[in-house]
Amino acid sequence: MLSVMATTLFAADDVSTYLILNDIPPYSRLTKARDIVTDQPKTIPGYTSYPGAGVVAGADHFIADHPDMTYRTKYQNDTLGVVVEVTKHSGSDSDIWLAHEIDIEFRNYYGIPGYYIITINGNTVYVYGAGGRDYRWLSGNKVIMIEYHDSHLTKPAPLEIIQAYLTKHPSTLPAVTTKDVMSIANKTTWIKDEMDRRLWLCDKWFMQLQLKKAEERQVYQETVKSMNIFLDYREKYYGVKAADEKNLLAGYLNTGNGTGIKAKLTEYKNWWTVNKDKAINL
Image (tube, rainbow, N blue to C red):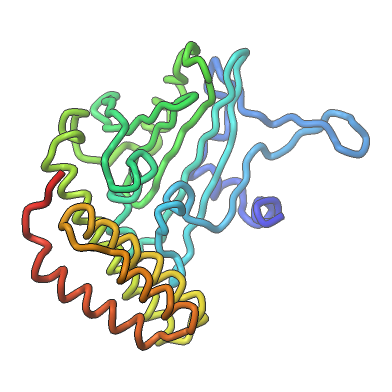
């Protein structure tokens, strides 16, 4: 319901800033449907727009203090359906993590990448393949995602659509190769950045509580979630056992002990200040 309502709230000129609202041959944009009551064909806008962080929402991208806006549309040819999603981020301090967050779904839980890089007309694009292809890149504070499903990976990639959107939203990702992504240096940097980000997220949530803009329960849940991930990374890469700490945090969460949770956050931040520059074992 939210996306349907939002579609009516934003003018086509606003949407066209982010989406290409015409066909991209040999692909047609989907603007036809059947009325669910009369079963007669009808013309539809063919896009949705709604408040949200888009593909980086799964990275726990912080939006509690600002709005982001996501736009989606679909294209189709005889054999392939393609979804395009463009998210405009607001320019808040959360955007410092966009280049880090954009590929989190292409990595395993512990930050090891499983994707590859393509370069199109000088534009760096991340590509992940699992029953199709998912292409992503950053263009300033916009995140662009283009995906299609093809379980046998036999259909041609929708290069016309990718190129059209790269023209509209050029990639601002650094010029890197798949080899660069798979390097020990890149993995190490990403892992340490994720540990940094998780502690940063905790601070952001506690600030929302201080400003009385979030409920205690939500803040405690979000901070404990990020602290648990930090502890898992610390155990994996620094050899510090996590089980007792995670049990303690679970107890604090169950009893609503915000003082205990915040004290642990301070402890972890102090530990991180001392240890973050140390070598890790990959």
